[in-house]
Image (cartoon, rainbow, N blue to C red):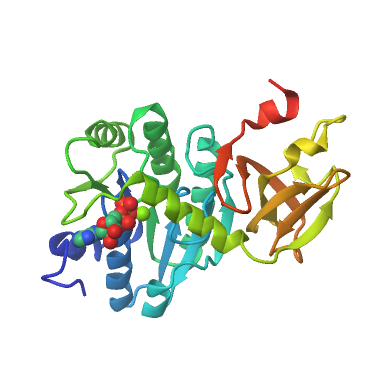
Amino acid sequence: MASSDGPYASLRERVIGEHGTVMLIGAPDTGKTTLATLLLGDALLARRTVAFVDADIGTPTVGPPACVGLKRIRSHSDLSDMGGADELRFVGSIQPQGAVLPHVVAATDLVEVARREADFIVLDTTGFVSGVVGQTLKYHLMELCNPALVIAMQRGGELEPTIGMLRRFLSARIAKVTPDGVTPVAPLERTETRRAAFAKELDGPLARWRVGHDVFAPTLPEAFDESRLDGMLVGVQDKQGRCLGLGALQWDGEAVYVATRHGDAMHGLRLGSLRIDLETFNTVEVRLRALMFGV
Ligand SMILES: Nc1ncnc2c1ncn2[C@@H]1O[C@H](COP(=O)(O)OP(=O)(O)O)[C@@H](O)[C@H]1O
Ligand SMILES: [Mg+2]
């Protein structure tokens, strides 16, 4: 049962009657993840089978940044410790620009996985809600994940163009919510949170594995100078398209190595569009085409 006097009480009463996927959209710090947790808790109490798909690739709650994560919520202790993902899909970017395709595919894939076992799924998203990229992303997420309900959290009218578009073209059912008591977080604090999230995945003693020329997706050009891979963030992949976790490439002057915790079941490495410094966990964007072909 939804709490009758807690935050967002009437919305939560409504949402508990939904089946399928509820997608949360809103700018950064509008309270999406906090509301997601409340909805998941309500659904648990109502004895639903519950899953959380976290598609916030920049400041995720489930799994490391640059990935979409799935967490099965079986108990309230799962809710209070959401960091460890049950499944990951690699996106390779901390923002959707240049990564809309892998981002939408990753989110859709995990919503599909969740649907096979859960009847109530919450899909959390990035704070990119406007402009061409934000709208294109939300359009295709809506199109493919097909949520029963979209919860749009907006302070002013910032989501109105996106809401209008989703209603007009995809007949979306949308509940608008004004954030309740949420204080914005400074961008620097968000960067700090992201660095800590990368550190959680990549800090400490990592095993180093030598990697060959042919283990990458996309594949490297023939006469590629492999020293250029130094510092690249990779998704460590199994054979079934699943991401096991992150790794960082290192060039020692002769060969390329991957530093990762996930070497045992590693089958291939996906290149994203980030270089990461393993001392500071700062990232810089890399255009993969420029890296490979100099264009
Ligand atoms: N209803 C609320 N009342 C008070 N603080 C809130 C509420 N919802 C969220 N917050 C706080 O606001 C900040 C941003 O919330 P969060 O859910 O992480 O936003 P988002 O996922 O949209 O970025 C967090 O520090 C969170 O604890
Ligand atoms: Mg969030």
